[in-house]
Length: 351
Image (cartoon, rainbow, N blue to C red; front, side):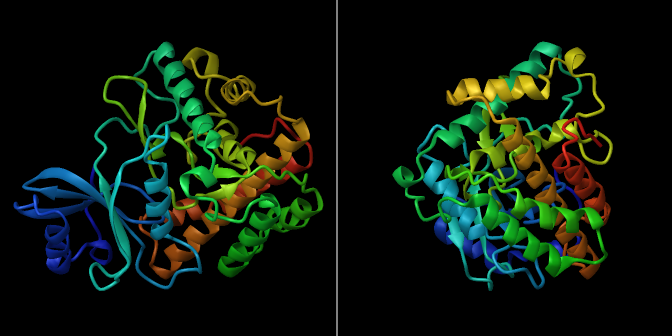
């Protein structure tokens, strides 16, 4: 669905239309651009020809941005590399690094037509349908983690090894750069995470934000046809990616679109432990060390709180891509508090 686009995010078609026609001569009708709902980071638009969706455009937001943030160029590269693997992606079509066209760099990709689920509880489905959807989600994540980065030309997509230490450093810097108030739990995690790093070295392509609303499913089957929003992707440890995904089991539906306050057996959605076992079955890996899992979850909460803080800061400065950013960003302290409880050994901590 598309929403009314604020003036600051409205695409100027004056230069975009000829840019598109030059690269896609089959576009001969009237070109329109409609912003998709939601999205706290890189604004995304449906490009329509005579009212029919033809492709999708994803761009950097306007305003002053943090270094390395909103890297649509990286999104284009990783999806192009993964297009030939078993990982479902919307085929990338063209990249434009010239900010003169629409104000910031952007890329266009094929339009994946299907179902997108914003509510992790999957309302309106039977327990069997929900179970199949969740089974497919964890299968696709395991498939991504099975890809050899070197084999698909992504060996230099990030620094191999030492992922947690580097990410903790990066998100600490990002958080400090956008800090608007003292969050004691964040300060505690900034100290605890480096001191308790388990030293895990495995390196794979990680999505960084793998969740139900970043997936397009087939219109009728429980099949993912496109994984979207690769902005946070890099080379990293699969456990970090898995923990970020499983955060949904630790947070509520209200405010966080999570599952912690849901009756999972009644819904047909696997419990956290069952879901982890499904992942292990797909990867053929050894059981996850509980201490490693606790660390990965605490890190995921820390990073999410840092992201939310950045969104909040951009909202205060008028640069966030959704008016809801102020609400979401203000919850950084709650997520950080949850992460700190998990770090302290409260493994059943929930929001």
